[in-house]
Amino acid sequence: AQTVTQSQPEMSVQEAETVTLSCTYDTSENNYYLFWYKQPPSRQMILVIRQEAYKQQNATENRFSVNFQKAAKSFSLKISDSQLGDTAMYFCAFTYNNNDMRFGAGTRLTVKP
Amino acid sequence: EAQVTQNPRYLITVTGKKLTVTCSQNMNHEYMSWYRQDPGLGLRQIYYSMNVEVTDKGDVPEGYKVSRKEKRNFPLILESPSPNQTSLYFCASSLLAGATDTQYFGPGTRLTVL
Image (tube, one colour):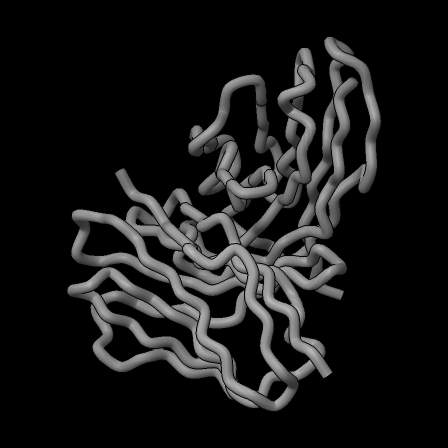
């Protein structure tokens, strides 16, 4: 079974500091895609970053970067220089067959001024 | 403006009363999908569609129906809603056929079944 686990239901960070959100997944597949989605209070789901499993290099998007450890099946999200607008629910997601997506339960991040 | 729209945004209904949540995208996307979001469970996929007239079950399809008669529309139908279908529903679409492409989400529909 393909599962995604986010073990931190809630986290907080001071503005301008760095925070790392954890995600682990379980799969027997070798080729797959991993994503981090952000859901602010507006409820809109926004793609933050995606990683292709066959790529060794960790994906980066401005202040957002991932630490992809394929052997450990770990996919953490690092947010640098946290801003108040980063306050949101963050979902880790996974797909291997190009059809269905599996999401984790989410981590609620609060950035404090 | 490129977007995914859902209607209604909020709906309160009673058990057994058939309802439809519409989803429309104006980006000529091939792939569309429905999810439900519940606290502590994240998003779970209900149904997806790779193209017109092609639909398939996701993780939690029981109690739901979909159709894809036109490329832009992907309605979610609850023939006989029950209280356990109270949830936040999202429609999403992506350009390429498949979930690996970037998915664009609608604003969500908050459904309450009494």
